[in-house]
Length: 212
Image 1 (cartoon, rainbow, N blue to C red):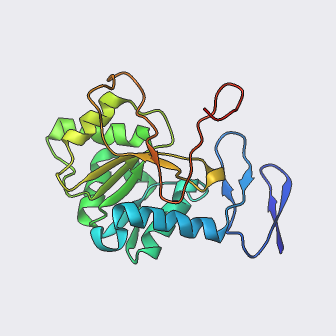
Image 2: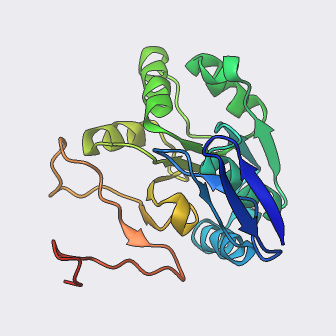
């Protein structure tokens, strides 16, 4: 075992050799212990659903290193034997530069927070360009609406998988995913969280925290 001192919260975490490094969750800063076994399961859930080892060339890494998505990108890229393209902050703040980086580096797998994807969407609308070279485009970590989902899909190629993900640091990043739209969904409603990843269970609870 070793001790990790979180200076942001002045708490001490004791981690065993079975634990991966802690991930900082959103909200009040707090460390989350994520096991190596959970990260392995996380990779194979993505490999099973997206065939990372055979379908993509590289991962565009946009998250700050203390954000859970950073660890997710590292695991998905390196365990699949693909390159990890680190996106500089000045590129991240420019939709044009971000688009050019992904295209030039063949980083055809990228996970966006909604703010960044909205910026890229605006650039695509203004220029008439598309992201049809992307294999997997992911959005998550904040509110994302059906109308936005449909708009982004228009700029994707026929071989692009556009996915909305839901999950928490405490449950090892991603728990469920949504891959399409439905005509019954209102454009003004939030995109559903979708179905659980392989080897993951999702429980629906009522107001009394009882299974429904």
